[in-house]
Amino acid sequence: MNEVLLLHYEIRGGDFIHAGESSGHVKNILKRLGFHPNLIRRTAIAMYEGEINMVIHAGGGTADVKITPEQIEIRLADHGPGIKNLDLAMREGYSTASDSVRELGFGAGMGLPNMKKYADDLKIRTAVGKGTTVSILTKVSRNQG
Amino acid sequence: MSEFYHSVTLNSESCKGCNNCMKRCPTEAIRVRNGKAHIITERCIDCGECIRVCPNHAKQAVSDPLSRISDFPYSVALPAPAFFGQFKNLDSLDQVLTALKQIGFQDVFEVSRSAETVSRYTEQLMKSDRLNRPVISSACPAVTRLIRVRFPNLCRNVLPLLPPVEIAARMARREAVQKSGLNPEQIGIFFISPCPAKATYIHMPLGTEKSEIDGVLSINDVYLEIVGIISRIEHPEPLSQSSRIGVGWAGSGGEASVLPSDNYLAADGIENVIKVLSEIEDDKLDTLDFIELDACCGGCVGGVLTVENPYVAKSRIQKLLKTLPSSRQQHRDEVPSSALWTVPLEYVPVMKLHDDVATAMKMMKQIEDLVQEMPGLDCGSCGAPACRAFSEDVVRGLASRGDCIFKRREQVQRLVEELSSLENYLPPPFRKPEDEDGAEKED
Image 1 (cartoon, rainbow over the protein chains, first blue to last red):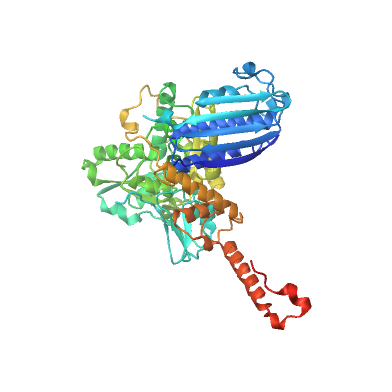
Image 2 (image 1 turned 30 degrees about the vertical axis):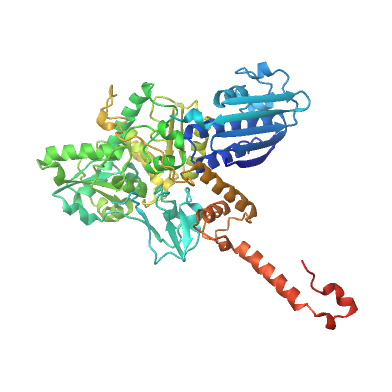
């Protein structure tokens, strides 16, 4: 039987001060569970980037985390504006963040590239005007041996 | 010696079982049981926050009595830089050093002297690309221990250099052997410490198997011994070999600000330290070169074994710095391997729920469910610092659900409701037509 731990978070849009609380919570839980430090790091950073994206671009959304002893799946879903050009968005340094957001120190165009870098699998489904769902997968096997 | 030595201990007689220390502990290492605070030893990092907040002075730091210096034919005092900030109207460091010799030490060796050495070594190490950026200072043992138990990914960022006090101990012993002609083991090396974390360090050193320090005296004990003498010293011996760089280590920022790179951050106070460490962990401070972290507010002048308010002490240190040469040591081209760590810093997962991930996950599920049921007031009446910590204790089998007074109250309320429904119950022959509704309904 495979053990599964599910976590759910509501992420508020525009709340830059508290952005990162969900990924911080997941990080602490993973430490308690005894996962490899590198897996914890990769998962926490990838989720943080996704969380921030929803805060900046999508007016918030939800995060669902599914932890098993083998892997961690994070599904970030929003009803925001969607991503017009996904290829461009995956490029380092490309961002559609507004000036006011950039003034806060966000919108460096590293969100999706970082997610790709740290995740073992990244799936993005997006529809302009409807929203975006990002699925991040990190695997325990990558940190073994 | 047991696996965990702590210099922070509890005086049970003075402890009233209040929850001040428990709420303040940064590693949730304290529980109140049977009216007394208990320290979970593997979690304690000896930061001394509990000593600071205890209104009954029940939390203490173990240090050696001054009489121990006579166990050795030749004893050397190693005053921490913060020591100099404790005295009013000091004209020079020599007054304090001379006074130390008058109370029984054969010699003195200022830790600020080796602090300058460590600054030079750090500068040199930073030039090479061998260190992971940002480099985190290893000078505060409470911070280093905190990283070891809570920030597994940052162990590799910690500067692998022995702290100034350890380097001072080694240099002092060598010097004393030369001066006295005695054997190294006949020399007693005594650190005058601002904090319990450094007192713990000599029993459980970081980065090395064994510390060269023979004993730790607290700043407040030694202060009382010499404060009266100092004003009477008319001709202090010219003993000081410290510079501004070294003595500046007494306060937060003193270590980082003398490095060539301006790209540094210095944080003090354990809560600020934790925030900074979390940010480093999330790659948010990856553009910085160096990070100095001090568990105590204000840096070492804020240590719990000091006498003076940290801000007053810092102000005095600022004044004393003006009397000192800016530096006394040359730049170093090489860092001797004797100054480097021989024991790497390794993650000690004391917060881990279980060795088996699947079991840990089961436990975590129960914890998360229990947290939802909890009142969320973090009142501490259950003897745990927060509802989440309590939930964890319950699942670990260290507490029982009914220890929560709010959970207990719900039970009582249910009982009262049941009693009142029993009380109102009338058997059918005694009911009136209008009472039919009041009859007990079968579930």
